[in-house]
Length: 251
Image (cartoon, rainbow, N blue to C red; front, side, top):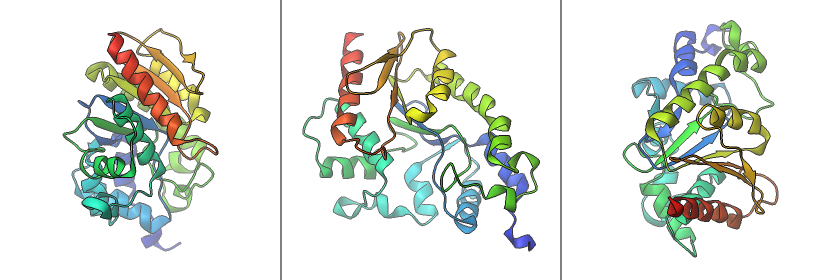
């Protein structure tokens, strides 16, 4: 393999150790997924290099970052903004419902995505449990393009960083005490419970709508289906937001 097809391993390791997501730790609404999507080697290399050029931040501004990597169409003003990221659309519906908005329409979602979602000085925080982009959990290109031994396969990668990241995310939640933390991806429930157990001893309870909730004196925690789950509807995410609003109102 030619050398130009290798990642910069020093930079790659720093990304693994340092990067957690987008938005504002002071925001009221946090959303945590497994990992962000990346495509081929060139796409992932560009994402990591631009993360480096922007200061190797622990969390970045989602719009500024995506504009820098050439995916700024989601943040164009007015009706030009593309709504082609299911995770973002669902997160926005949760937040708007949690804030009391009813009859949410596409214009509401587009305006929030353009101006509010994942911004460094706004009310949401979008975190990833794992730091490297990947096409899917079944794909792993890093073993072919890096000499870092812990990236030889996905299992060694997860063993290297999962425990540290679970501890770090739980510590950030303790420090900042957001109103709500929504974990998405029922298949990763074990990890979401691990994070939550480090913060509260309150057990999750199932809801009739199909998500799990628990709450301590500061934060409501939700384990939800992933937005691309077959059969999941917008109403499912509206119901999560309404549940958050009801719990906050009880305080």
